[in-house]
Length: 101
Image (tube, rainbow, N blue to C red; front, side):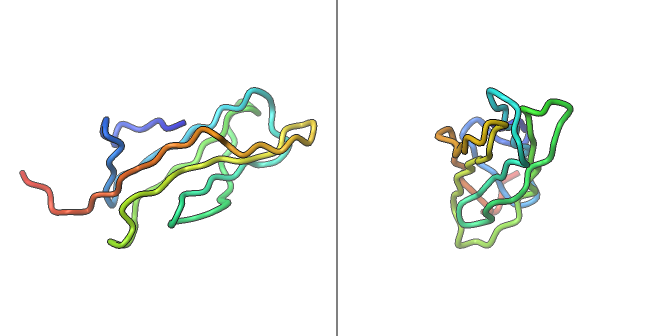
């Protein structure tokens, strides 16, 4: 569900990182799917791609220090009216501590 070169193998992100979520459904979606990031945003419209079954959302990480993790979940409705709420999700740890160089 996530495609980004800025996300570490431990799924750690920090402010200013750019994360692109790609949702690929098994069939075309009737309406624009949404994505929710717990504690950050909910039911945000995703962006269409050239495929009616693939949608993206780009998140520039910018969170307050009290949020230390977030789970991304996608939902939408297919052409037959079947509602989908993703059972597949990804959880990010948000680390804005000073980095050692």
